[in-house]
Amino acid sequence: MKGLILSGGRGTRLRPLTYTRAKQLIPVANKPILFYGIEAIVRCGITEIGIVVGDTKDEVKATVGDGEKLGCKITYIEQDEPRGLAHAVLVSEQFLKNDRFVMYLGDNVIKDGIDSLVNEFRTNKPNSQILLAHVSNPSQFGVAELEGDRIVKLEEKPKNPRSDLAIVGVYMFDENVFKAVHSIKPSWRNEYEITDAISWLIDNGYSVVSHIIKGWWKDTGKADDLLEANRIMLELLERNVKGKIDPTCRIDGKVVIEEGAKISGSVIRGPVIIGANAEIVNSYIGPFTSIGPGAKVTNSEVEHSILLDECEMTDLNCRLTDSLIGKQARIMRTKGLPHVNRFILGDQSEAELL
Image (cartoon, one colour):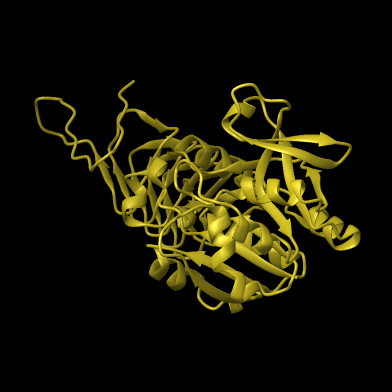
C-alpha cells in the first residue's frame, strides 16, 4: 500500500497566517499539522508516501524533506491549482499506479490514528473504505447514507441530511478509483469532487464501505479548530523538562520545556509546551498553550493559545487567551501616556478587546 497526503490548499480561512506559510505547516503542540498525517500513515507500515503540493510547495519540501527522519520515502506531486480532491487523485495516478492507497487530508488531526481503518481495508479488501464520524451539524459536510456498513449514497452539504455521518478527511481506495476520477465532470465550483468519484463507484457496482471513527478528530481549517486540536494533542504530552529553570519558578503538570529555553520568575501550568530557545520572564503560562521556538514572553499571562516562532509578548496588563499569534509578531504595552490601544494589523487580521 501507499499513502497520499493532500497539502495543496490555500488556507483562506486561516488568513493572515496563511499568507506567509502553508496551512498544513501551522504547528499544533509545536509540531506541523502535516506531520501528524505522515506519522499516522507510517504507523500503519506504509512507507511510500506522495504529498500533493501547490503554491506552498517550496516551504512544504523544506520542512518535510525526503521523509527519512519520519521513517518514510516522500514523493512530491505538483498540482497546478486546487481543483478538488478527485483532481489530486488524478494527478497522482503515475505515483500510485495499481497500488491500494490511503488518502489523508493534510490539515486533519486524528487523535487515535488510522491503524484500525487501514487494517480493515487490508483484511476485507473492498474497492473503497471511507472514514465517517457522527457530527452535530451534518449539513456542513459530505454526508453518507448506509445500509449496514455499506455506503449507498453520498450528499455534499445537504440541506436536509439523511444521516449525521460526515465524511472525515481519510479515504481508502484501490485502482478502480482512477476509472471514477476519469469519468466525472467538474462540479458547479469547477472542482473535481471526491464525493462524485465515490458516488460513481457506488453507482457502478463497486464495494464502498464505511468505518465510523470513535475517537476525536478535527479539520483544522479555522482558528478555533486549531486551538481545540492544540488542546487535545497537548493532553497527550509526557512531562519532559530540558530547559534552564531558575529556583523561583513553579512548574505544574504535563509540561515540555525544550533545550535552550529559559524560564525565570514564572509559573508554568500544563499541559504546555515551550519550544527551544524560548524565554519566559516573570510570566504565567496557563494550560493548553504552545510557545514556539525562540518566542519571548515577559511580564505577561497567556493560556489556551498558540504562539508561533520568535513572537514576543511584553508587559500585557491582561491575560491573553484563545489566541493564535503569528511568527515574529509582537504584542506590547508601552509605558507612555495616554493609555490607548494601538494596532498594526495585516490583511484579514482579527483583534478583539474584551
